[in-house]
Image (cartoon, rainbow, N blue to C red; front, side, top):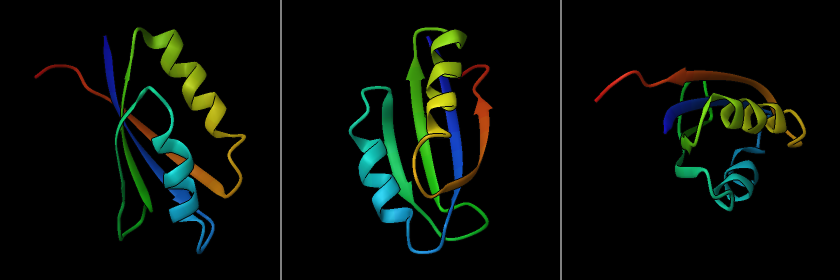
Length: 76
């Protein structure tokens, strides 16, 4: 099991729509719209790194996402 935190920068005013779209994905365990450099924070759980890569690659097709940063958890 791989747990990752994905930080998303969005186009202005698109963060709520992006969050609603991503909350529907099975891999997304937590999704929050936040203030700051990044607009949406996700907690994602996948079976392996390949599945995580596919998920992150798919984010490129979500309208309004301009940049992502992925942090993979290493313990806990």
